[in-house]
Amino acid sequence: MLADLNELWVSTVFWLQNNWLQIIVASVLAAAIVAALYALRRFGKKWCLSEHSSGTWLTVIGQTISRTTNFFILMVAIRLVDGYAQTPRALDNAIVFLFTVAAVLQGAIWARELVLGAIEHRTMDSHYRGETIINAMGLIRLLVSVVVFAIAAVVLLDNLGVNVTGLVAGLGVGGIAIGLAAQGIFADLFAALAIIFDRPFSKGDAISFDNSSGTIEAIGLKSTRIRAYTGELRIIANKNLLDKEILNVTGRKHIRLPFTIGVAYETPPEMLAKIPGILKELVEAEGGEAARAGFEAFGASSLDFALLVDVPGNDWSVAHPLRDRLLIAIMKRFAQEGISIPYPTQTTFTAAPDGRLIMPYPGDPQ
View: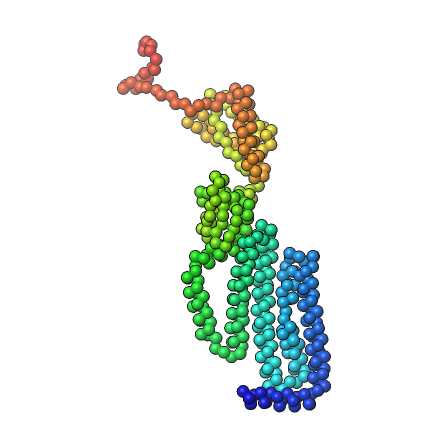
């Protein structure tokens, strides 16, 4: 070690004495490179603070550039000019070593900022900027930092000639052990991140899942709280929630109201042909849209017509009164047209053993 330091000192002194002009020129070039990189870093800071780039990918890129370290800038400048300055072998090896350290660490910092910036860009929606995303971002920042710098450490050691096979194997086994021990927690955590980033619903949305329905009150890192329409608060693990089919009622564009209307078999065919037009007319008069109005089936005691009504929006306080008004309007119009809506009826015929019908009222069988 002392011999190496002595060689470095002697070679450096000899180099300074015999290459002073190249060293001066290289120093000027290095100063220019440093100034340019500092200017680029300042430009990155202004870029991420600019109103024009706020909330865009330009902000993420500017934030990443602004995280460039002084050590990296200095080593880049020195590495670019050391060949022109004809540095001795021992000093060149030291420069290469320091540049490798600076490049690996700077690469890790840039990677971390890009990942975190992309995640923050994805969660710019105000519905997700509450306590949940703050807690999630703190945990994500820790996990990303650990992973990125662990990879950087392995890369750096490998570049320095250290055998990292055992280290990588140990990290892999340790990661598997931790994952198995906390798989339930991690499953709910990743499900929470999936909800935040994929956005199947947000706070305040009305959803239906499995046999339950309600309004989202809070999205936590482990569970989601849903206020049921009956008043109780349902708490369901994020993983279990995402395993079910979720209907986001808030995201619907219209509410569909189904009706089945039966009329008597004695209704004349001419009047039966008019019924779909009558139903559409009544729906449009009440402000709805008839998605379908037509004959459906021969029922047990009636001829059944199907009516599907679409009400724009997702507000049931509008759809329910419209349904009530429409039902009353159908009853009034059918009464005016002489169209009968029958009760469920059944006719029974009695036969003698020889097959002759037995009349249900007294009289002369002759």
